[in-house]
Image (cartoon, rainbow, N blue to C red):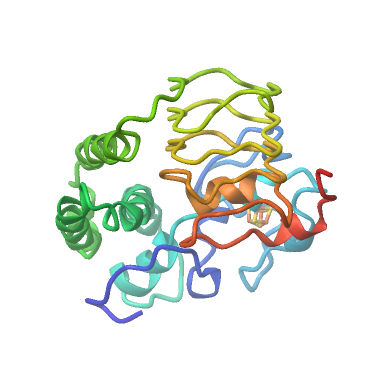
Length: 266
Ligand code: SF4
């Protein structure tokens, strides 16, 4: 990626230095099978910076890696902020902590710019965030990421309000719906921002107009569900969920490859 071009919104690990496999610390959990200290390579990281268990992450107890997405921030750090550096440095991890949330905001703004209600405002914010993303490493550490997120959050509120105008859906923001069977609920135009939907059963549901910003869809069963009209859904959320050939997805998002291996809901 040339300096000055628009930052990418999806990860390309071939142009990164495995920053996300080295920088963060992990406590053993259902998402990551072992403890890993910060700034220490994962035990499965190969010398060529590839993952030694890439094709069996879920089976080996690393589903968190399977669904992780840096939204293109990793290659931005290596190829742009640090000018194509060949070796990892601690400063790169600091830059990634700032750039990943900014890239996530940019990915969500890609949907917002298509909204007739907030498109112009979203495009202006995206341009400002792109300017922040292009800052040199020392200036990046001064960026107020929280302020950017709050501004984007207010804009997303306006997007959702416009899209759901005149359509009443349940307000389930932040709701704990862990493992819930929701197949009989009408979730069209629902507010599901930040909802805990881990392992929830959403089979066959129509989520047209439903807001899913920050909803935790890990292991959620969305086979046969209609997601093409859902609002503020990301590729990361789709990757974390379990869909099938009958699940519809928004036109700007790709269907996760692992869905093909899952049995159909019917
Ligand atoms: S399991 Fe693979 S993808 Fe996950 S941190 Fe280790 S090397 Fe990286």
